[in-house]
Length: 256
Image 1 (cartoon, rainbow, N blue to C red):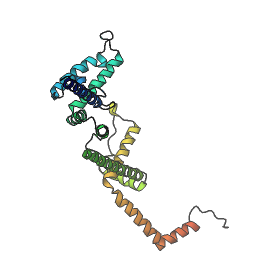
Image 2 (cartoon, one colour):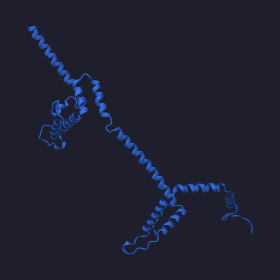
Image 3 (spheres, one colour):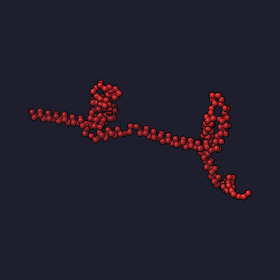
């Protein structure tokens, strides 16, 4: 009888030791709330609802928030209060998310899968938080904006180039005069503008006419076509030879 009681006592001690060892080894330093249980940090049970977890977090957050810390109200220092606040926030972030809470509960129930818990924890932490479809959409929009900016820059450069060519300026100026855009009456009194302002307005009018009335692509094609014709025209070749040998401005030493 005594041996039976002693055997039962030994089994109970072993069982308590095993259970205690399992509960301690289930909490891993560096994962979730570390060696403290997230449930214990918030003061809730494992079957607590989201509402209960939220209430517990708000109460503890108000208590440990660094902005609410007052020296002398408790034995904790400011650093300790900040650490407690971070621990409470970590516990809340872990338990409010259903997937994280499921992983955490699995870790508590299966402490022997040590390396698996590390993999699961860091896989979730390092996984992208944004939907892949949103990333693709943003990338496409960025590429489209870059292409539009490149086209607009090329178009603006072409307009600036045409503004320097007398032929296009003359055409645009004549169109502006026909439309009465450059034949405005002189302003008087307070509304009178400076010559610089008037010149800037006229330049803008000419620029707008060049944009709207002159097809840049057609003009460039016409210029290239004209150059090709002039390069192959025999009369143009003779004219260039005459300009080179006997044209105006050539200095010679021939006697009168």
